[in-house]
Length: 378
Image (cartoon, rainbow, N blue to C red; front, side):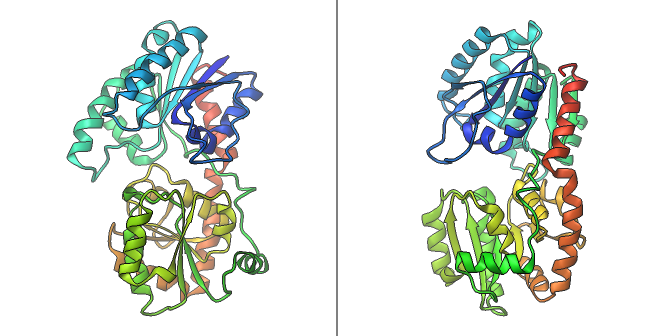
């Protein structure tokens, strides 16, 4: 069987889909990739398991004319390679792919779309609903299987009667729990020494690109509040630094520059999370956030905003706390409640180590293989 994986950028395939691509190859599949190469921004991702790669000039913006060229390039790739399956990801990558694959689909090619979080959701702007919802509803009829990764998207696709042949719910992209795992107190202390942190530092981590959607400002304000009680608080912010100037200005204005560290794009999140006390998320919206699943695998307690994706993973008072979006005072209070109660951190951590098993790479691979088998592809 010949499979084409498509996404707007290379890093999406490299970060999230290589385990399943390798699983497909174990089943005797030939797997190609089509995307825009962004290796300069996110280096170090191994996509060598792909048998063939095509450069496609995608743009994430729905208004960019680059996507017209991407459509033509992709249509040519599809027509020349006779794929059995085309599996697309990312909003614009999936829109362009399904339009380009219409003829191939009539000839028997199966088209699968994994939605990593619809842009229309409960609480989304009217603009998002007007722009993205009609497009997805229309393209559903050119989709043989829609894979959703959170309950809200799954329920919405069912409720709105999307005309795709199958709608499935899969637990995200999976996290390697042999890489992300709990550490002993001694190992944690050693990591802190290695990275230059004090043993009595209170460390929070939020691995997320510095974009408006990730809502770091809420956490900056929470840090300001926490400093009234705990002077040794630090917020670690690994991620691409798109808004670094704005955020640097914000922490300076708030007087918390010494308590917030912008770490840039990192490949050692498992160590940074393991040396931290609490994992946090202030995001405005999520699909099914990998950073929270990674925190669960480490055994960290979590404080996260009450948005789609986060609430699929964090059960309030069970494995962490859920707080209202932009309620930075409650965020601060919940973080203080944790750092002042080591037993609660430990109890939440134990729950996470158990709950994360359903989101492990091996569990998700089994789910994905079942989806392909259900489509008579394996």
